[in-house]
Length: 321
Image (cartoon, rainbow, N blue to C red; front, side, top):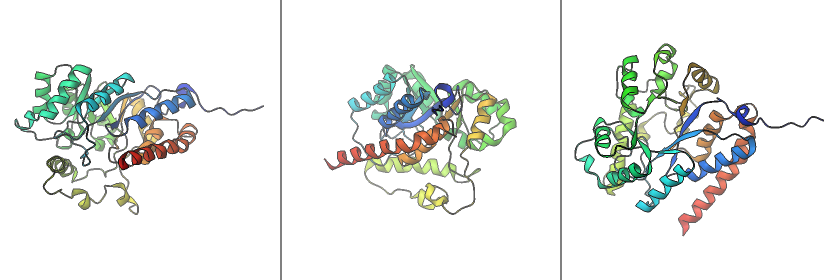
């Protein structure tokens, strides 16, 4: 008698041998861990999440502005970092604010978090050489990653540029536009590279630099509690995603086949964005890029949506108290 069984172990993986860097730190880390546990229970496969990145509301945060203050104390921050480490995952702080000044380096909260991370273990994603050098001089146990923001301000992203990043950082992100330049990708140092999987912007976006700089300004307004938000996303024609409802233009999220082709080229670490996504959108991407697409992904995503809904209800209850 035929008894269909879901794929088990490495057969459940979209890209066996690949590892992942995902968002969720200080945002929905518990939901990420719940997803890992449910996948393992269902398929006997532990999705290899190597890094979990994010930030509490802090001046140095960039990439995605954190407008809502969740009121994290230093004890809360330590518990969040330690909880991730206890799962065998390296926490990464998104201290990727570009164009920092010497005065910015004096920020007491940023330095207090760095001191904690230096003692516990973990890494920092940076785009400012000034902050990079500050961390190297004062917090030597912290792993340094080059942010995708850094590549967004570089006009000549050639082989030599990426090799320099590989020499200066533990990890660097290949600019999403370059995911389609197969000749360049073939020549890049791959042992420290990260491939961005689900960038939802258009290729060669002319506003990318402005986007990151306005995030920095909006973060400063959120921290000060006064000032004017830039309103950049109101002007952006492609982000947030609902603006793509009727356009035939393709964003630069990789297909599963494109991602697997890059894995076959020798890239082993893949990154997902999603700190401003609703959880349903992020976990759709997380599961479709980590699980075999024909059977494992459709078997996992619908039931996990119930876990997301339960998480949202608990979160709503907490806000009412």
